[in-house]
Image (cartoon, rainbow, N blue to C red; front, side):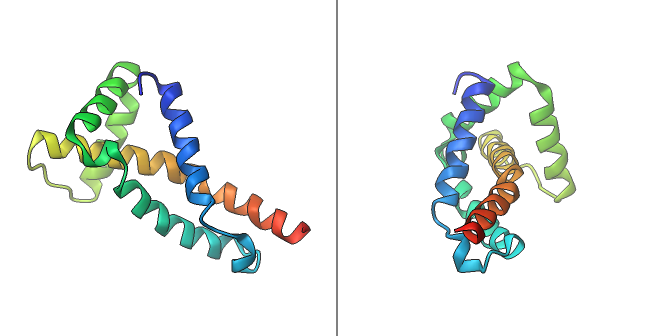
Length: 124
């Protein structure tokens, strides 16, 4: 990813991949229940992203965000501090920051997608 636009596109693709694993009908059209399952899966999904696993990719993501907007990194660091995260080494820190940022961005639109899927399921 070279720009935040690339990141937004990537996040949208991740959300689509996650949502493709679920059928709203399996949850009786209940968006809240569906979201619980989708959100749990999203946590596992983000754990497997290259930007979270590989140091170089985490560094590249954080570096791109550092030059585009300080809010992404500052918000992630605040969230980690609130969770009691303890710094171990710089490479791991980059991966943890990448995880926090990607998870937050992916989760941000999931509930609305669950609601839409449930509405479509009821209409069908």
